[in-house]
Structure formats: C-alpha cells, structure tokens
Image (cartoon, rainbow, N blue to C red; front, top):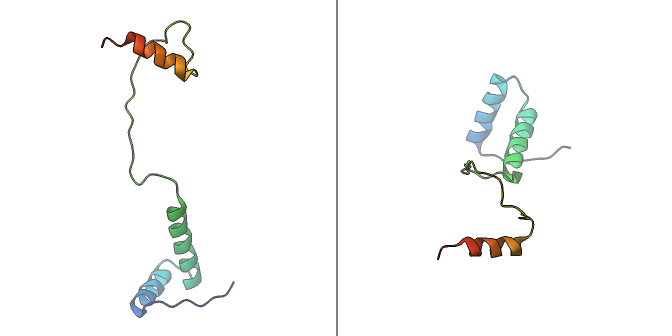
Length: 82
C-alpha cells in the first residue's frame, strides 16, 4: 500500500541515515519500526517483571477439595487460632 506521511526534517534525515547504515530502504525501516511499536503497544505483558514467592509444603489435608472455596474457607476458619 502506498501512503504519505509527514515527518519532521530531523527525524526523516536520521531515519534515512539509519536505513543506509543498516542497508534497508526507508520503507523497510518505517515498516519495521511500526511493527515493533505496535507489537509493544498491543502487548499484554506487564511493564515490569513480577517475581512471586514460592513455598515448599506438604500435601493438603485429607478430604480437602481445593476447588471447593466454601469448604476451604470453613477449614481455614476452623484452623484459625483467633
């Protein structure tokens, strides 16, 4: 597809120089830059790495169904020393 874009002269000159250095056409450079920019913008990744703590533990108590939230709450409250 052909289109017209307007760039500041300084940006255009810098882009043309970069295209020459990397042996790409200006069109390829714009295409690559837009691809990277849009992928970053559309990314669902968090901007920072989150490290979650992990713990070693034993097995669950007998007859505990981890998919039954209501029952889990009853068990946790029963074990609560408060």
